[in-house]
Image (tube, rainbow, N blue to C red; front, side, top):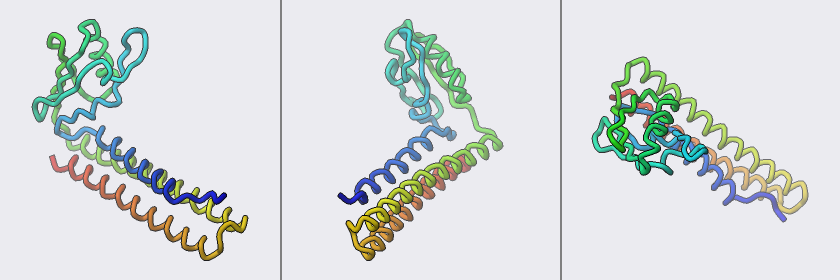
Length: 185
């Protein structure tokens, strides 16, 4: 049975790009974005839970996030969780809601965020190159076992390289878009 599976390689590369896009969505720009609170975990009912399992997050205004806590007893836990996440946000309790005004970004903070976006992009590209390496090794192994011909191996390697180039370009485009979004505010 041949080890090389083009569909699996493509799925894994696509997963790396999606993961990168999720990481980039969590970076704060000047605008309020609900995905900013995705990494927040809250200690409720004796265990750590993601914020989206104890509250509804919305962006009612361009520079404000609102967290509607479902159980009134968890409001202070949600506030502590947001503060502990170190996102640079200052939670304000308003009954069963926690309001998060988005402070203006300083020029220095913008540059740091743009640099962080670049680091996320590099990690995404490394993940894609690791998938490429796995695909190339699988092709060499299949050829060594005489399951595919040398020509098929070369064709497969060209396919894997083409996929790699495509997904690396997607990573670069996503990072460039995010950097522009961060620096343009």
